Image (cartoon, rainbow, N blue to C red):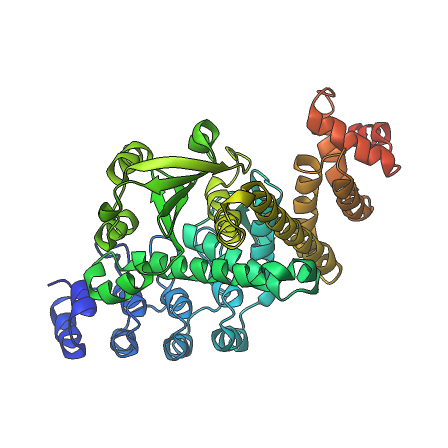
Length: 469
């Protein structure tokens, strides 16, 4: 048996014995992890201690750039985090996607792990800047990449559109919890009991997704998985063919949330009657979650197998570009809110329930968008020059790509952004945009941009002249 399998299935003594014939500690195994990371994944402090004492490199990464400390903190295993840190683990490590180690404890409100990491030197600014860039990227549907500054004041590149499904679910859940506790959500208080149901359903889905890391043997977690699958409403996040959607089971209804190409053609949130409910077993749900699925089955076979009959559609906007998977995860909020409202008010009030569900969703989205932008603007003042440079580039992307001149709310945002971009140290960014895009002045993005500059009193011709000079 390989060292990895011994770590997963064997005893501590069997791990010690295996090291005698398998001395290679810092290699990627058949599952994509190092032996030490496997020990962290299964939450075994004793096996991790054996491996570290045998010479395993504490900061050796898996295929996604994550170290054992990533996994220990993700599992909220304080003892294992302490062990890794005492062996010199880097608290400011980040994944190949630029995600700092501190992000998940910060987002999941794991206070003890967060405090421990910070006490060992983890930089809160680094994690907050990553989260803020990702939130702004999704909220304003930005495309491309942006730089953030790591703990060593070095620029690292972060994709604005790329998200792990679990990260997406975590960040949406965290935002909803913050919204519920924010004074700005006071006017939505009558929906809070239903919001609590949505938050709990999302937390269940996170628990199910988390167990995808144990693809080695989901059977050993069968009782836990089956317990989660009994929840109602039940959110099933499904990945297939480079795409991710969310499915919802609530009583005798089955909902598909897909705001991509499928949603464009069939409806973004479709409520189905289940004609073959006997097929929707826990075994089937586990296979949906933990086995690779082909797009043909998800798009066609699933409908036939469960006998799904469309009953109604909730009209959320299609999102083909940007982070479609995030949009599909986010869609569960109005989708479930509509069902809970309909259950409370009765089927004769379908239109009213739909309007209320969408109103709640849009209010939360606008709050979340404003909060993310406010953090960027406010943290700018206390940032060092390198961080200020990254924030101005992000703010310029929001202004050019996302602000609609005909939207009064966007005009207010644009003025706040231009207050920074018009400063002498950062006006060069405006010059670059003007120089790059002024050739096509019939372009909608250019017209928006030019109108904002004009309203703010910035002369485009002067910017062009200075650029040429």
